[in-house]
Image (cartoon, rainbow, N blue to C red; front, top):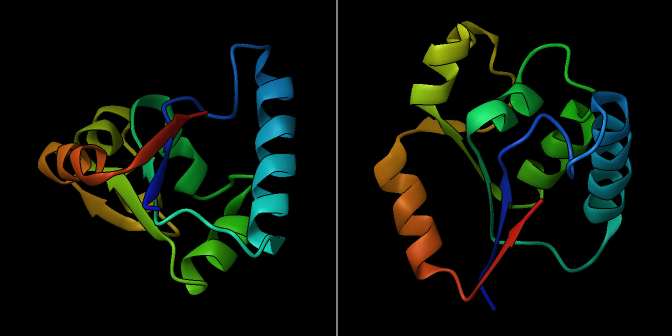
Length: 111
């Protein structure tokens, strides 16, 4: 099954920022060590901050990418936040790629 995960926040859930970050670290570390992985992870809105310099989850995202998980990062969002030169993992793409990923997914999970 083609599963796509979506990060639209700089962390997970609707919680204080520190808790969002803690949850993202825990989730992505477990996912990176799991046998079952998603086909793709999408990052847009504040979620793009997770793939940038200083992110607490870079280690886990790098492991996931090395394991074949496609990481797609919204270029419009990176430009908006002034982070285009801070990306450390994933491929920068646009909304057409994000739309295509969502449309072709069998399962989409928003985190």
